[in-house]
Image (cartoon, rainbow, N blue to C red):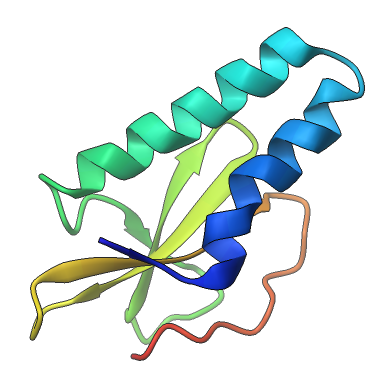
Length: 98
C-alpha cells in the first residue's frame, strides 16, 4: 500500500481539527480511518467508485463523514491511497498515477 503526501498527512490534519472539540473523538476517528484502510490490504476493490469520477479508476471508502479516496493499481497489485477528505469538501484534483 502506498500513500500520497496528502493521504499521509490527512490523519494528523483530521486529528488536530477534531481535537479542538474532543481529543477522544479525534483519536477514535483516526483509528476508524486507519482500520478501514487496513481492510483494503485484503479487499483491494471493496470501496465504491467515486461518483464525481465516473470512469471508475478511483474508489472510495466512507468512514463516518470522511472519504478515503484510493486507486487500485492492478498491474502492481497495490492500493494507492490518494487522499482523505471530509464529505462536505469538494474533491480536490487527484494525482494517483492512474
